[in-house]
Image (tube, rainbow, N blue to C red):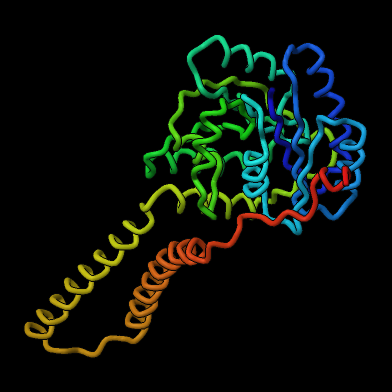
Length: 310
């Protein structure tokens, strides 16, 4: 069996299109499929559509959260619920080509690999500024982190049960799946495909959300920002010592002329800004620690397809 995990947030228009395309692909396969749709607190008719699909098809399952917990929580819930020997994660908007699935299955069954991932060959159709920052993010994270992340890689991948079980052992609250998929270290090969537009609906990923998501990825998989904060602090102290020596020598040689206050204010503001920057970096890590120590659940389930059976 192959488990197909599909996170959904306000996707009432896309779900029927996705299910139709997947069923077309399913007819060409010799494998049994189970669908696990995860409703991440949608405000539209997503849940009603999932209820209808589950009533009509016994191979369709769904998990509905009590509120929006984010895509990472939805992925985690889907992985926990999956029972297939192979597990795939797909976006419901059809930006992840379903027709690649048979090829991915063939690769993972014929070669000694644990995962077949997908990556976009280009970012055609994406806003230029988003593409620019996405490329810079991957360049940065691969320099400062020991965990390699492939530029353009999608969450869309096919994994063996062994790899899925390894990922489920990582029970952290602050999750960054692209990093977790790489961190567990199983052998992975990638398939490239041309970038696609959404089949229906609108994306919930704004530039600001993507920016915050990238910050989470850096904090979760690198302590480089803390090292930078320490370096900046040490450099500021060194500059202050040199400036102090300069002022003392100048006073001994040329006397102590009174200089204007703008330079003093500028220095105070600079040092204050450096301190706030370093405190902010440290605070980000402390915030992550704070969330982990609370040990709150990653998500809360309000309803599943089992409710329909009762």
